[in-house]
Length: 431
Image 1 (cartoon, rainbow, N blue to C red):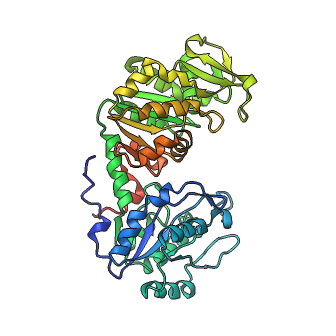
Image 2: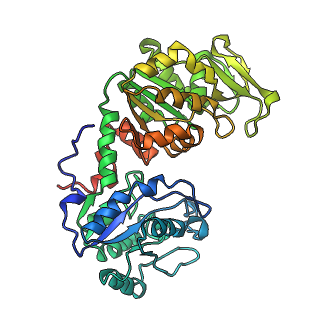
Image 3: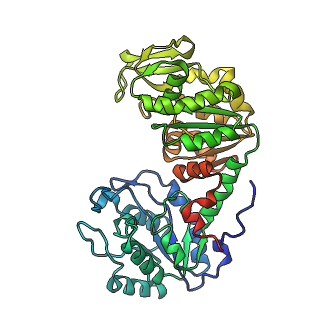
């Protein structure tokens, strides 16, 4: 892996932390309905926490969890389902970290409107006196200024900065420019944490891959993947598609109709079909799994359809998976075995109902021991863990694997050709 970071990027390890309050933005967005669904992204920040403690720093952590703001009304909903409490409990149990969450007043419509000094002052004093191990702020999306992009945003940024000597962004997956990832970085000395640095270095391997380079991309909406797909297409030797993206591609290429794929999606896919007629980079599985029902697995309504049997004008129900035997064919297994860089942002089927195609794909990727295998996207990692648990555990300690903590951030960086244009990253760069 290349060790080249942008020389203008300040790094956490270059700062003296002794006695300094370190405000760290992490990506611990792993709570659903009050329960941690996967601790991977929490554990990935342990290096940050150990370093702050070892160098005598005083940590204040913050993360977003879920979606709390109604886009139409601006109302912010807070409660146990989107609380940081499970994360704080996990850290205190696993690391004996001694984190405390400030009990800030919450307006039922606006959320938290201020980092109340009467609450924060005594807690920061306890932090500086080493009476507590650290502060963990409430969900940043409970704060009125986190996403508002008005005076409240600047006010929140100023309040956050007022408590800190140094700001650390260790949340590459939180790539949107919100107060806790962008504005605050402009009001206090700022730098990149260890996980942020690791994500940026690993992205170099996608943007400048060892060849042959194979990418696997899926998604539920074609329009959200147009930019990254076009950028990836120029770089790859082979591209494998899945999900609704692939359904739209099939409709455009073969003139068929598939339930759930509208004509706008097909029109968007046509440009990729036209581009691939000459280059032939897109790999075609031999068969797909068709289901007459979308939300339920009914064996009576499932059949395997060969792509070679497609005829223009034919109508099909939902294609909800790639037939697992497709990955035994040389046309897919060969390129996957020869690749030296494999980027995976994909679940082949509608999981958990249809996971056989994804399980076969991940198993085949795992047999390529020479390739660097880079996985991105929460669904991708969750299904790798569920469908191939042995491979997932092996990969955690295997240098030929890398798990990005944020799929959206990676795809946006691919589309832009660099991660340094993402506003939270750009905010860290020295002039």
